[in-house]
Length: 197
Image (cartoon, rainbow, N blue to C red; front, side):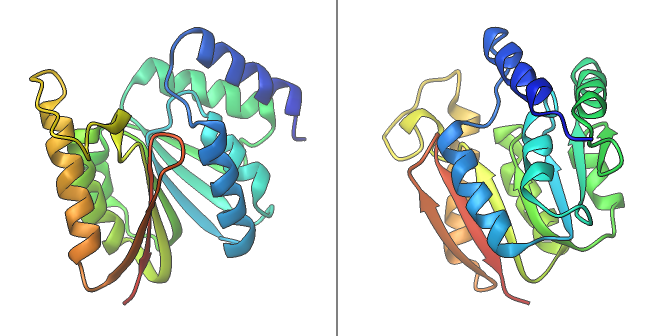
């Protein structure tokens, strides 16, 4: 049984502990996308504490199954607990491990793929995402503008790799003939790519 109160608590706790979770305006847009697409399978790369996966479950039908991958064991365990308390344990599967290693072992087809993990690995996640998509699937990538750095001449050492790979990601989604993409300046930048197979 879905529990909104616990979902709200998960959000509050994540914000208090500076755990990155999806921003409200990005979530609003994704809610709109999910309600229109009515997906049966969603893949999320980057579970954190299970907040976004639980929101996706809330916005979709009971038939929709969500697979979500988390590298950090402690966070993944917290996510499993949160998802259970929110009431979505029968619809959300938390896979613990490195997405770069896990993705090649998955052979399901997904209607929606949501990327919100290691920014330096976005181009890798995109290639796997395309492989796991069918015609018309959507690949959503959060934080693609990364605090405005990606579209500026930002070159500080600390974030340089992330920024470079995000620029690669944007170039790929714009140039790949099998993708129809747009980037929305909401939250920290949301890329939406429709797969044509």
